Image (tube, rainbow, N blue to C red):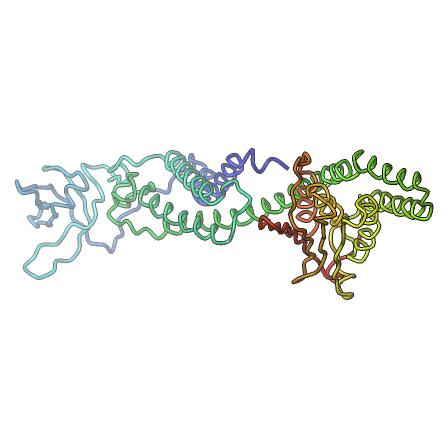
Length: 436
C-alpha cells in the first residue's frame, strides 16, 4: 500500500475541503434560497408610534435638528447623521424617542422616508454579495484545515504519542495565529475585513469554527497515524519474510561449503587408509547425521538446546578426528536448560569459526567452552590466531545475527577481549513460544 507515502497532500486537501464545507454549511444553505423570491413589503410605520415630519437643519459642528411644520424640533445626533448619510435640507419622516428630560428635545430614532421615498437602510453600505462571502470563507477554512493537517500528519512510521502531542500543540498555536487573519463581516457596515481589524476580535462563532477545524484535524491525524503504523507493520513483516528467505539461503550456502565437505572426506579417507574400520563407520554415521541435521533444519526457526547439543556432539566428532587430541569441548549446560529454545543451527557457525580462525597444535590445543549463563548460551574460546589467517567471508556470524534478530527480536552479544572470543545467544523458555 503506497498511497500513504505518495499522496498525503491530496488526502489532506480532500479532508480540508470537507471540513471547509461543513464549517460553511450555513452559507451554503443561503445559496439554496431563490434570490428572485420577492421581499416582504416595506414596513409601515406603526400607528401607535410617534413620528415627525420636517426639514433637516445641520449645524456646522455636525449636529442637526428636524424642524417640523408646527415649529417643533427633533434632535439628530452627529453620529446618526453621518452614519445614515443625511444632508442639510432633507425632507424626512422619522420616528422619535421621548426626550430624557422635559427641557430636552425628542431624539431621532429611525428614518422612515427621505425626500418622499422609502428610506433604504440596505443601500447605506456597499455590502459584498453572499457568493463573495461564501467563496472567501471556503478558501480560508480550506487553507486553515490543510495547514493544520500538514502539521499533524507527517509521513513517518515512528509516530509516537509524545510526537503526536507536540504536533497537536503546534497545530493549536498555528490555528491561534490564523484566527486573527480570519475574514469577518463588520456588523454595522457589512464590510469584510481581517479579524484583527474588527472592533471585537473575540468572535464566538469564529472561535467555534476554528476549534472545530482543530479537533477534526487532530482526530483525522490520529486515525491516519494508526493506519500508517499498521501499514508499516505489514511492510516490515513482508520485508522480514524476504530477509528470512535470503538469510536461509545464505545460511545453507555458507554452512554447507565444499571446503568443509572435502576436509570431512579427507579425514574419512585417512581412517580408511589406516584401517580403523570402527572409527570410519562411526565417522560416516556422524557425518551423515551432521548433513541430515543441517538440511532438515535449514527451514526451521527454533529448536531446543538439547537438539543443538546433540548436533554439536556429532559435528564436534568430525573435528576431533581431524585434530586428534588437540581439540576439546567443555560443555556445562544444566539439564533444565536443554528444553529451552534458540534459533536452529546456532552452534555450527560458532564452532566452525573457532576452528577456522585459530591455530590448533599439540602445544596449544583449542578448548571450546559451551555453557549457559543468565538465560544465554555462551560459546567461548581462547584466541590463537594462525600465522596465515584464513580468508573470512563474514557469512557465519552475520547469518546468526540476522536469524536471531528475525526469530526472537533479540541481539547476540559478541565480546572480544583480545585473548578470549565469546558469543552469547539468547535462549527462550519453551512455554513462551513454539518449536517450528
